[in-house]
Length: 255
Ligand SMILES: Nc1ncnc2c1ncn2[C@@H]1O[C@H](COP(=O)(O)OP(=O)(O)O)[C@@H](O)[C@H]1O
Ligand SMILES: [Mg+2]
Image 1: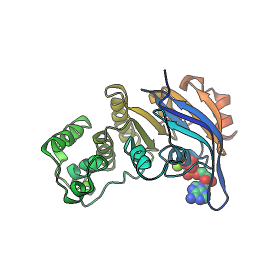
Image 2 (image 1 turned 30 degrees about the vertical axis):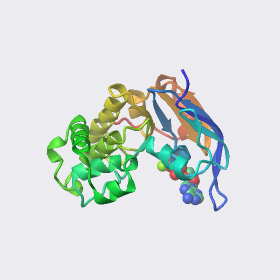
Image 3 (image 1 turned 90 degrees about the vertical axis):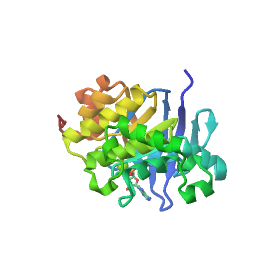
Image 4 (image 1 turned 120 degrees about the vertical axis):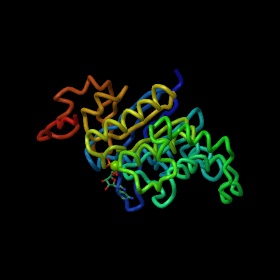
């Protein structure tokens, strides 16, 4: 199967001279749920930002859906970003706006500037937005303000917004890091629905190994900006765990 994402020898040096990624190579296959693990500071977010091209790799190449996006700019870069949904630890909703409007913002990339500025969504778009909210189980909150929702519900709105975008690829950067364990699972399960039922390819940065074992179809691990592991969740033995997280690390279960 042709990979959806191909990263080859990607290195990233920040403007201050700090090198955050060293020759990272990996593929993401269509329909995968690839999880990236590693200690805080290992380069997980940097890697995501190079894939969605918020950052330009210093060297190496990134291809998405057959297009070399390593150095694209202008309209091809905007096109590339439209293909990618993003979910963040802090949800990134517009707090004072309604839930349904936050979901509709997922459609902005596909609208003309004039349409977007006027906020004239079609009835089709409104229906799609409601369907996206139904998928994540919060259609009844459509007209509440986003900041009136709990953290887990806000993250589900963010998932609905990403779904609205109909992305080829969904990047989730520690999507449950601000949530309690029970809520974490509820959010992870909706990401799983997007992946399994709607065929969305997911790349997700995660901290907890127990979540990785439950949701990932494949795993890569970063350490100090280098890829140090690639395999199936079941391949992460105690020895690998210590190699990735350090000798003194203890695995914490998230129930
Ligand atoms: N804008 C930046 N400028 C310089 N260094 C940065 C910048 N952003 C992140 N870093 C550094 O790059 C390394 C990787 O960061 P990051 O990708 O955020 O790691 P992770 O997401 O795994 O916690 C860290 O050492 C971090 O301090
Ligand atoms: Mg991070």
